[in-house]
Length: 256
Image 1 (cartoon, rainbow, N blue to C red):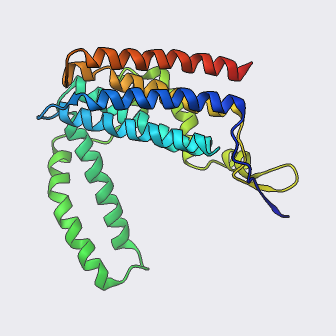
Image 2 (image 1 turned 45 degrees about the horizontal axis):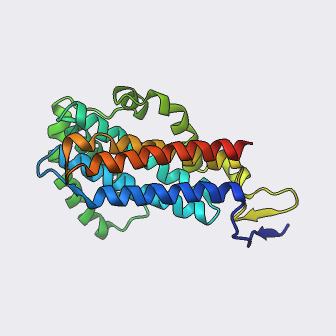
C-alpha cells in the first residue's frame, strides 16, 4: 500500500483565522517581554524563566499550526502546562524548587543506573557513567532523606489551582506519547497511509485554545514578581486578554 504525502501547505480559512489571532498574541507577548525587568533572586527569577520558556513554546506551537501540523503542537502545549504548574507552585511555596531539583536528580539517577545495568553498553564507557552517578547520589540522597518524593502531575495540578486543565492535559499526553489512536488519526487514510495529513478542526482548536489559556495565565503573576516600565504591563496584558477574546471568537467561527 502506498503512502500518500500531503503536499498542499495552504491553510484552510478556519486555520488561517486562528493563525492571525496567534500572531497578534505573539506581538503582545513580545511587547510585554521588551518592557520586562526580571527579579534578581529566586524563586521569582525562576518563575520568570518558566514564563519565558512558556512563551517560546507558544511560538513553537504557532509555527506547527502554520505548517498544518497542529497535532504535533500538543507536545509543546503539554510542556507549557507543566511549566505553568511549576510556576504556580513556586508562587505558593518557595521550597518547591527543592521538589524540582529532586525530580531532576531522580531522573538522572534512574537513567544512569539503567545504563550501568545494560549489557550492551561497553564496560570502559561505564566508568564515566559510574562517576556521574557518584556525583549525582549525594544530592539525591540528601533530598530523599529529607522526605522529598516524586509527585504525580495530577496532584500538583490540583495544588497549583489548575484542576480545570487536567482533561486537556490528558488529551495532550495522548498526542505526545503517540498513542495508537493518535497514530491512526495521523497516518491511516482511507486508501493509503498518510504523511503530513490535516487533522480535525476540533483538535486544532482544542490544542490552540489550551496554549492561549496557558500563556495568558502564565503572564498574570508577572505584575507582582517583575518590574515593568510605566504601565506597560497593564497595557500588554490587556492586549493579551483582548486577543484571548478574539481567539474565542475564532474558535466559535471554526465550529460553525
